[in-house]
Length: 322
Image (cartoon, rainbow, N blue to C red):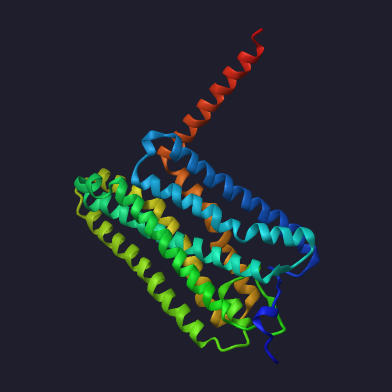
């Protein structure tokens, strides 16, 4: 099959999760519900952290950034999928596909780096509590988030440029619900050896590196907790990082499970379905994990709603006054 010139590729076709017409309404309702829950839940986390001075700490600063990134992460894929189902069109332009892939990788890497930074924050808080405020000062927290953004932008830009140099065949159907990097490379007719080598090298270096940092941080945390003599102190120390550990486990187990199982199954549709776990389900569950067992977040939300309710009552009373 002769490859087309790259400049002549104008659009791709996203096959989605299922081509069954009877399932489209169900998929639309399911993904719309999950998307709205994700956006609302993460916005509530951001609201709680920004409105309550008690939560102006490094841990909650990183959490609010993670919530913002999760909203953006989900928004790169789900709205386009919902629009395709609603309009009965599976077409995405070449530029739109590259753009979607760029932002998807950007926010996925940001999730990766922010989870690593949050693990470091918990390591300092539990293993070096006396120096916590000295080490985790606002300037360092801001710098860590900025470096996470810079690294993510550069990685995403590198991947996008590698895809832009590829030529594609006449078959431009992507068996996924978004423009996923691996699927894009598999559609290429030109030599993808360099792309694959760069992709795997960066994945091992910048995927394995943060994961190793997280595992080392929790190794030190567990060692520090075991040396504590008070059972109450052990419980309090563990409870401060239990939510983060749950989110880390959910994110890495689902994403690694998808990419490690894909070569073995050779089933693109199964891979696309499994990708829902880390692209949609994980960002949706994060607010619940951080709020259900976190009295600080629940207290901040209650105070925010109480203040909003009080202001609303005052406004109504003023309107009634002649």
